Image (tube, rainbow over all chains, first blue to last red):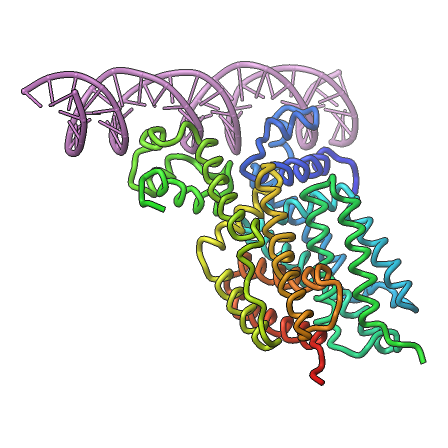
Length: 199
Length: 199
DNA sequence: TATTATAGTGACCAAATGGTCACCTGTCAA
DNA sequence: TTGACAGGTGACCATTTGGTCACTATAATA
């Protein structure tokens, strides 16, 4: 993505919309954050709502790439230990990446005010990750690494508690370490419960 | 709670703050919703922020009563079937009660904008219910109804997925039936996995 | 070189919004 | 009866905010 003003506006918009909500964001602050005057924004977008929509467009593209196509599946781990390591790495990233944190905040705080955000929120928090892990678990069951269960239900039981603790990280960043430790504990406990005993 | 104007203002405030957020709520609409003029509000509260704080006070009292004291524990079920029935009843209530729905919406959308909401959100979505079910599970383990596991971890694994689906109900009310069915499925599946086989 | 499109500025506007104030009215106590 | 007070009203005010416009500067182009 080029570093054009048009894109920089969206970057700043993500920050402000995520921190203060759509209604709580004003264009003067947005422009000031970019070292621009408010009227300059209107050279690139027609209105506040236009900026908002462009930001959502960008997010939809991002999610379509990340969750939409099941082509780019994550590799199926060769052991339960590897699954734990991979999960923790991915969670660590998602909990620390500023852009993703802001995206989650925006989805949470605006999910009831915008139909597109609503859809994205369900995709992000519920179906997206769960479906991905369903494929992973299915693969691991076929490899004889996990007990044969409904992979969809299993993936949901796995991702929902993790998601709850990720939310805690967003809400109370001071407790990130504590939350990550709890995630680790949960992940080990969960995998241990469904690990297929080696012959 | 008496039906005084002061209380009615808080009832209406919950609706508007939950639907539109703090910033998105204006006092004219609030007053109009009560058939009052805006200036009448100032006979009962000093400012918009004062109304907000009074609403949070009320919510804190409510949560303190519901989660705070571990005196009023729910009864320990005498069978896993009873646990399932009780859980589903409680979830059904929480998913359909208008006041509780609004409260959840408010906690979600304002959790990053207000320190007290932040604390309440963690209590509501994470610790409150989980701690309650930890006690229930502990009791059921002592009765020999559930396998002996860490009750806290087990309760968290139980409540977090339910909570995720409750959020879905709030976000997409059209999918309430579907979500409730999934909750039912999850609950049966979860309890089956941890049920102590009868001798 | 003259022209034109692009990006940016500051002044300005109208609507929305939180808050204040003088005033009204019914109730209740002295 | 009268005075105080609680609860309510509408007019008004200052600030915030999304949006417009005339104007400028610069770089590319005919």
